[in-house]
Length: 300
Image (cartoon, rainbow, N blue to C red):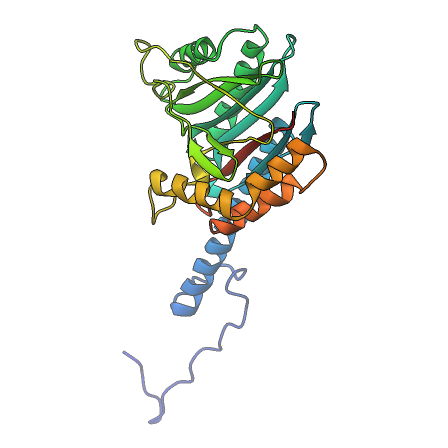
């Protein structure tokens, strides 16, 4: 109860104009303070997410070859497009490799580790380096995937991954390949495009009881081989099959096959520019997943 003296109420205590965040013993309440705290927490979460993205991208750049670089060989030109997901939480374990072997063949591979973020990047590094080292033995692609599957089953618990890998022999122009639950490559030839028939092969880390089959195709000068991860063809609004069809249509419509044919005959259209047009024609990079595309143009 408030007392009354001479019919008047006592004056209220002086207001405390100290900073609520620093004044001792002051516990501010009210919507403005709650909103301020929420805003700070939101800003802190955004800052942590941005830092995680910077670290993840730096780690990926240290692991993978330069994604925009091209490789010019006497028998082929190889170009790569890798575009990370738009959100830090969506950065995945996509990877690729293109390396000459001691026997003169070219080793080509593309893969994708399940999951996102730093754990997926770390597991991707292990698988990519392991497969590249195993490829130097000269073993066939089916055996390489068998060994890689054993590594996943015994060393990477609760991990699954997909991959496609193969050897291109410039002497015979034969591309011999195998896949582990991964989209098959697309062959662009003489104004048309088709997806290669995939040999049997289950996802890495699923089982050790099923062997990996092997297929081969003889490439011709002017052919273009596209190896890619599912981030290139899959969207929320469409499945992988529809995405593959779109890629094949875009490869023909944008003149990507013609660019490869020109390379086969001599200096011509830029393969890198053709890949950029292809990505633009299918709607640009996937904001929810990494996009990796490895293109091999046979030059003669």
